[in-house]
Length: 43
Image (cartoon, rainbow, N blue to C red):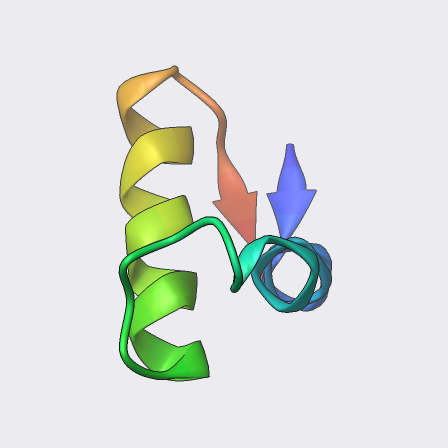
């Protein structure tokens, strides 16, 4: 399980490596990757 707050922290750290144009886009990218790996996202 991972929380949205943790995903946001990961997105901030990975912004340089991602092609995302904004933090919100990076968060969505990481959420999608987590879901495809079978990780449950909780609030």
